[in-house]
Image (cartoon, rainbow, N blue to C red):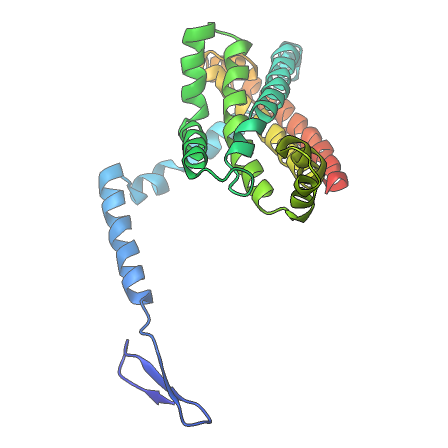
Length: 272
C-alpha cells in the first residue's frame, strides 16, 4: 500500500499485481460546509449561546412551578381530553380510509401511466407539506371553532402520512399472485383485492395505529388555534400562568398517551 500526502488518494496493490486507487475522501469538505452552514444559520436566526446558558434555567423554573399538580383541577380536564381522543380517533380513521384509492393510483406496479402516478404523488406531497396547525387554522374559518376543525386537520395529516406509507408498501409486494389472478381472467380490482390486500393489510393497519397514537399528541396543541380539545384549556392556563393546572393537564395527558401507545403497540405486534 502506498500513502500519498494528506487528503490525497491511496493506492492498494492487490496480490495479482493490480493497483487500485481509493477515491479521495470528501469528508473534510463536508465538515467545512456544515460549519459554514451552521455559522450563517446562527447569524440569521439570532442564536445566542450566552442567552441559553444564562436564561435557559428559567425553563426548569417554570416546569418546577407545575409540580405538584393542582389535583382539584382534574374535573375540568376529562371532557376536553375525551374531545381530543375523539378527534384523534375519527380523524385517523377518516384519513387512513380516504387515502386508499390515492395510494393505489400512486403505486407504479399497479398503475402504468407515469402521468397519473406523478400527479398522485405530487398531490400527496403537497398535502404532506401542510403543517397541521396551519390546516387546523384554515379549518376554523371553514367549519368554525371546535372539534370539527381539529378532526379535519388530523384527517388531513393522516391522509398524507398513510398515503406515502401505503403506496410504498404496495410497491414492495410480490406481484406473482396478482399477475396470476389477471391471467385467469380476474379484473384488476379483483386481482388487487385477492392478491395485494392480504399482503399489505397487517402493515397498513399497524401504520394507521401508529399514526393514531401520534395524533393524540398532535391534537393536544390544536386548541391554540381554536380547534377544540385539551389544547384550549392548556393554552388558557398557560396564559393565566396557572402552572399548577398546567401540570395537572400534562400529567393527565402523559398517562393517556402512555396507555394509548401501550395498547397500540400491543395491537401492532399482533398484526405484524
